[in-house]
Image (tube, rainbow, N blue to C red):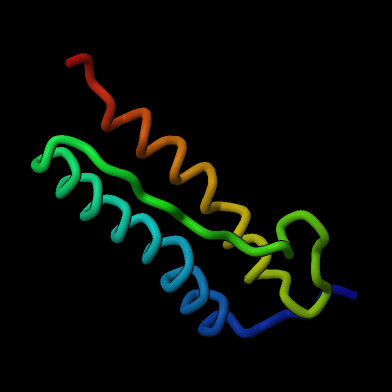
Length: 80
C-alpha cells in the first residue's frame, strides 16, 4: 500500500518543491537575461530514479524539477 500523506502535507510539499523551484527559476532567468547570460543549476533527488515508498509525494515533486528547467530554458532562449 502506498502511504497517503494528508492533503495539506501534499500541498505544502508541492508548494515548496515545484512552485518554489518554478518561482526561483523564473526570477533567476530574468536576472540572467538582464545581465546578458549566466548559469543556473537546479538539483533534484535520487528518489526520482530509485523511488522511495515512504516519500511518494516528495519523489513525484522531485521528478517535476527537470521538466520545469527544460521548459523554462526553452522559453527564455532567443537568438542574439
